[in-house]
Image 1: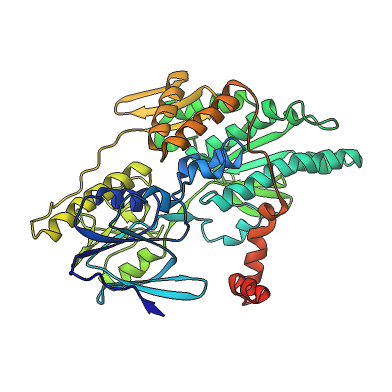
Image 2 (image 1 turned 30 degrees about the vertical axis):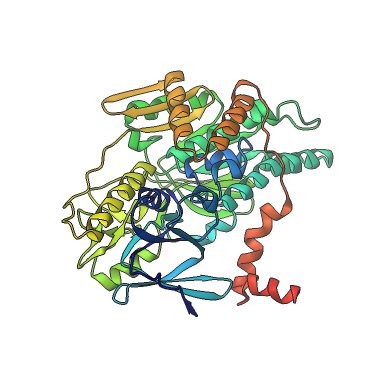
Amino acid sequence: MSSAPTQAGGRHRVVVVGTGFGGLFATRALRRADVDITLVGKTTAHLFQPLLYQVATGILSEGEIAPAVREVVAKQRNVTTILGDVTHIDVEARTVSSEHLGRTLVTPYDDLVVAAGAGQSYFGNDHFSQFAPGMKSIDDALELRGRILGCFELAELAMLRGDKHEASRLLSFVVVGAGPTGVEMAGQIAELSLRTLRRDFRHIDPSTAHVTLVDGAKQVLPAFGDRLGEIAQRRLEKMGVEVILGSMVTDVDATGIELKDVDSGYVRRVESVCKVWAAGVQASPLGKQLADQTGADTDRSGRIAVLPDLTLPGHPEIHVVGDMISLDKLPGVAQVAIQGARFSAKQILRRAAGQPTEERFHYFDKGSMATVSRFSAVASVGRLRFGGFVAWLLWLGVHIVYIIGFKNRVTTLLHWAVSFVGRGRAERTITEQQVFGRQAIQQLESMGQDPERLGDSRRA
């Protein structure tokens, strides 16, 4: 174990945990401040998570939605970037411990911003993940791309063997969760089969692929209201997507998924090799760790109850932002993280200067949007609720603005033109490593072996 060196001169030390929207925007908001920032990230990239489904369906490359953090903050001279998984925060000693490749680094702080985000929740059925990957990381998206496109390849082989039943299961796709991510994913798989792959195979017809969207709620996009939910559902059904509402997932295996109607109790099975889990989130375990040390409460999703100024009881130096917080029923969306990060950065500047801080964080709701298919989206902005082409154009504009880097914006626009105006998709390369890498790592971990150390020993 080692400790990060303390900067001579006694400058105010700020540690930021997480390189998502909250962590990155807090760091950038302090770019002109007389403070030393240590940005600790589990990965080397800043992930633009709202477009992750487009990586999974071959529209965008991972680099376009996940630029290197070091490149993003390269000109910000008061930032030191550390690659590591934060395993412990000592609120009394004011230190953050992070690990990478079995090595631990302890970093002291005067102010701490925790923006560690949230992961996928399987509602106590984590074994479902073996057959139904979530979509919270680049690894998830690349695995899903391999599974989705790979199913079409395997279906072609099945037909060559004369196995129509196997081909049918391979051309059946199930998306669990009818929120924005699930709706966007189901719509893009449908478009992939109907437009992009339609002429590419000789023994299967990709347009006959069956896409099923499942949710325990009674409507699609519950947070958007009845009207927009109905618009989205009608559009999906027009594309051939089967929408099953009011049904809970009770079992998942390699070749299908079991659903139970919440009203009647009727159980049905949907045969499908490729399943996508887009339902439920679980906050970072750092939330519970902080709650245990500060006396704050956590909810069922692991989010920590913060004070109105986004700090923790008795610890005004700890600021929690983004998906980790439970406050005034704020949604787990990017704008909450961005605005919370900027607010916390201002609070840190006031604390460092010995000035009084603001008492409450005020969130400004800029609206919500979700695409259903090319040229079709739904939008809720203020009192306005609308769908169709205008909503889709608004969605395009908003997402381009928040993509980091001019180069990434240009290449994203070009790929959108190819995919939405034409029918091609630039990112259709898949590998077996994408599909099986996660499971191989999990098997090594279950055997008590550290995959990273195993790799080190083989290279020695």
